[in-house]
Image (cartoon, one colour):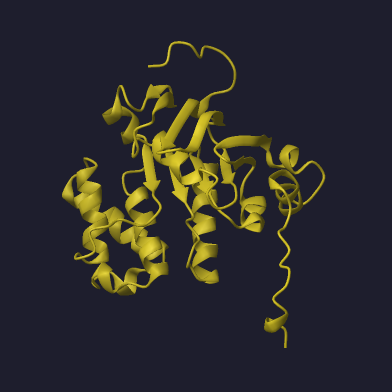
Length: 258
């Protein structure tokens, strides 16, 4: 357990000085961030900002070069079993056992997380229905579309009833109707006391869903706080462009104009 945090609001994920260097590139550099318990927290940044690397380190999927991360006060690296039991993670890339049916996969993931078979089967069926996958539950995951794969990966992250969900681009390739269902499910999770950490490129989605946000560029936090504080009177999209350096305008390309 982390003995140094004795006051202040409860923190779900406490990131302290996380650092990761790939060859000569600093992907994340001495980054500090406290994500409040019970928040819907958005992590935003341009491509290559370090979002996925940061979340991978904070959830125990990638070994940091320096720094620590606490999950509800538990060091993810010193006590990984206890910390990871509180986490549900939808990582970048949807690495799944795709030679199983969707329902079987979610059931299997529940059993890996310590659920008995009957409970895992019941929860898997409920999640597949909630995510609009009940009609495809017997279909092999390898035959799923990208959007369906994203949804079954979310079901795998939820089946053991975690306290914290960490989702890397959960709405990517998901149709608008399914996205609305996912948003409703996540809102309900937060309303019941859970914490959601969401990485996304879509500012409109983050502004609509998240009560807190952090803007990251070049492995550093440029701004963090409530969504209103970070937006500073602008739309989140306008504020994001101001912080990360605006829009690159295409020059030339006369041959492309009709």
